[in-house]
Length: 153
Image (cartoon, rainbow, N blue to C red; front, side, top):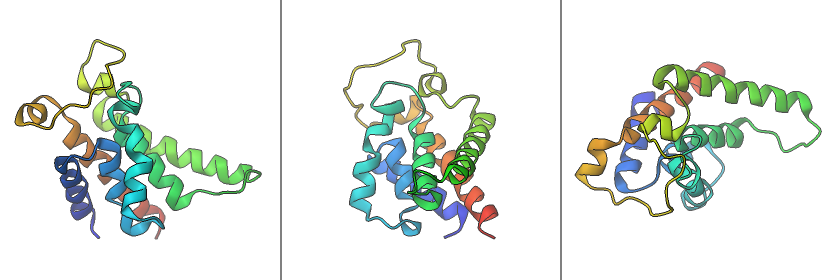
């Protein structure tokens, strides 16, 4: 799948009601050894900056999850593999921060509060007007797709 198609797919998932983290992860389902339902469940907690705690943006944690599923190791003694993986994580995070100014949800949304309540927001036209989340989903997906394309040659 080309980068633009994958980006559009992720943004459509977000518009359908999946949270930011789920939208990014689900856009890479075709490359991962996991079904869509499981990916949606495992990435659900990371929306809203980790359960609406407004910490690391869910799109960024979505990128990290895909990196882990695609490149990660399951050997706890593979310190070289872990270091290489953390390098990947830091590289995509840096690119996202360069593009958007932060990787922190509340900063990206311009919120003054550190945390919000657990109530999920209904997806209305007003929601989409005041939130950059759909665009952030697109940015994260594009960054990750380009990373994979460049490193899998």
